[in-house]
Image (tube, rainbow, N blue to C red; front, side, top):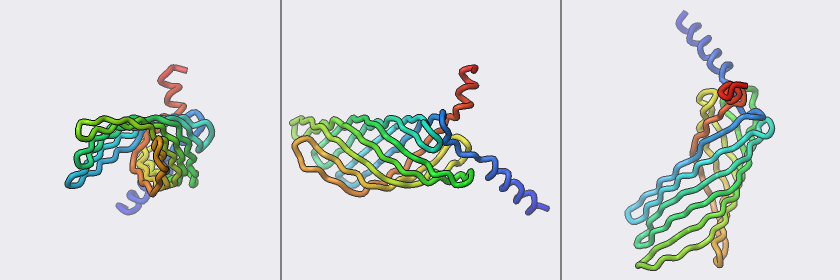
Length: 181
């Protein structure tokens, strides 16, 4: 009897979770990066907000605030840019593969030995990953891809990037209820 009740509970849980990526929904979230070694430290906070224009397709804006210290060099970066992503729907599964691309313009200010410099950086990220919806509104996500950065007056550089983050999905029907229409 215990196994039957437990099995029914899992079935109800997995059929009740309908990870929402429908037209009219919103998503708000981001990722956090902390990297620390003996003489190097980096802290990056990258929030984002987007709107679902079609089922599975969202677009919006990402922002970036980063502080780092590499030896005697200290840097601060502030940036913003658009993103687009597409979620693949797997029969109302709480697991959704996704593809993500973004473009970011940043201003990086560096200070070393009392000398302060500013530089403009443009970055392009293209990657894929998955979101795991722990309930109808909250998803944990992992995305791996290629990031290409171009510093002003310096050759471009690129490489592998990995992001871990979360998203809160505000369902269109919930927002309409809050607004009263």
